[in-house]
Image 1 (tube, helix red, strand yellow):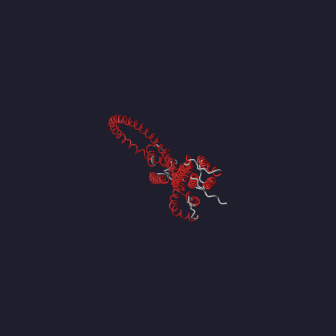
Image 2: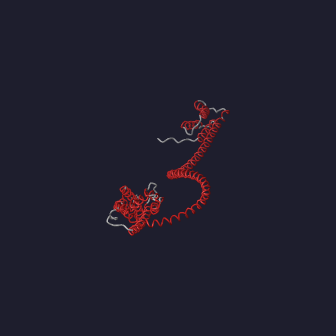
Image 3: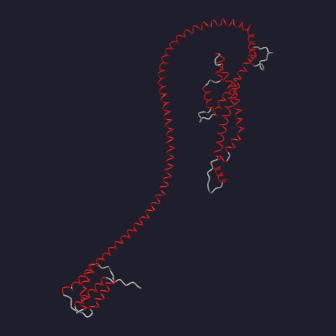
Length: 421
């Protein structure tokens, strides 16, 4: 069954007014209008307040009684009542329409606000997505910056330590300079004193030299006579001593003469020159093979020590003239001989192990080859060899050979020098 149509307040008000007027005028169809009005009101339509219903019941009550007994016109005082009820209904209708309009306006405003907020929300989500990606990038940058900060802090600590060490060294040098200045002043005073004494001694020495020259002339005459008698005996004694030390050269059957010792002197000069050249060569080899960047490099330590020591010729000169530094001369002579042998044997051992060293360095498994998803392993190795390995490997292998030769040379020197003792 279809639902009854909703009756508007304007129709209810019109029916009520018609029923009230017909009853007031005693019309023939007054009862029919009352029934229609009651049915319409009972069927329901727009919402009606309780106060309006009570007023309508008061208006319709006389019409019912008049239909049952004798018809009588309603009192004149009650005729304005239906008109007031209709006016209150119309006011309610107007109020409801105003309320509907207000609610509709409010709903439209809410729709506009909702659409605006949805648009703002979408924009905010887009901005939030961009900010999230930016935040991710910034976190990556932050990690890099933290790593850089850590590296810079470690470098700063190293520099601070070096600065402190340099400051301590500077303070020591400063104190040493002050002491040197004091000593220099004392030495200047002492030099002045010695200069005066030197003048006095020079006069005394000149007098002593004149006296010595006189005595030397007399002694030379005596020496020439004695040498003719003792030279042959001295040559034999020296030759016997040389035979004891080196019988392969100084044979026992030979009778030494003055010419023999002249030849011995010539041979000694040539040997000294040869050893001097060997000594210079050893210094050059030590300078070339040393690892300056390593503080514990043994060849660098040996090179520094040998550079500070007197050379072989100087040591031999002091030994022959003053009979001093005999031990230094012997040790230096042994060192030159041992170093000459050690350089040859050490470099030879390095050449023997060179293939293994090169094999290890040229093994692709030891290379730090960057891998990529779009390249095969062989392609990555070829690219790394073309771009990096062929440029870096020669220098790296050369440095490795140099360090290996340095170690081998020092090892052979240490063993050979111990055998000499």
